[in-house]
Amino acid sequence: MEITCSRCHQTVQAGSIYCPECGLPQLVYSAENNAAPGGQPEKWNEVVRDAGSIEWRPALRYALMLAIPAGVLCSLLSPLNILALLVMAATGAWVVALYMRNRKPSWLTLGAGARLGLVTGVLGGWTAAAASGVALYGARYWFHTGKIFDDFWGTLVNQQMTQEWTSMGVDAQTIALTKSWMLSPEGRAGGVLCALGFLVAALLVFAVAGAALSARFLARTRRPQN
Image (cartoon, rainbow, N blue to C red):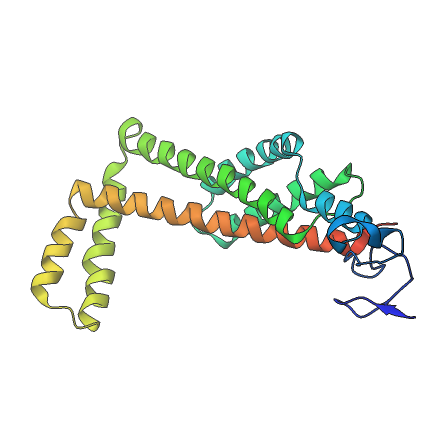
């Protein structure tokens, strides 16, 4: 009887564990395997368990090796610059590729790839936030350029934000109270923290996406054997 893959609908030879086209593991029954407890073939259980598990010691080593430099690089770029997001996505994909390079069988589920990307994104995102915080602190207190940032923040609040709030129908008293708080030292610090938090979240999302896509792509190209 002809067997087709449930994902790409390509023909799969009888007894094959993986689809030769997309790498999806196939549920193969045989008289020997059907005797396994729970009705699931033993070979299938071993394949799925191996593909979905992660050896965290080498995984963390690769993540640390790549995520920290990538985080520093992202902090040097403009906050939420598309290039910084692409760098973090590429870093997540690279971590998965390095992890799978010596993996036998060389296959990883989408969820396992996303978990590697999550770790990479956490390390890279917090590194970027810490590096950006140190850079802002140094610019203000070591190089005495705080007035430049204060003027930029004041212009942003007094012009752009005021115009947007007015167009949204916010009353003048609320605008004045909000502006006075945002122009205070606490308001400026809160704005920086919010920006850094948003940066970490964005880098995390792109790292997870890049790692998951890398796991999917490598599963398709490597075509693992039985």
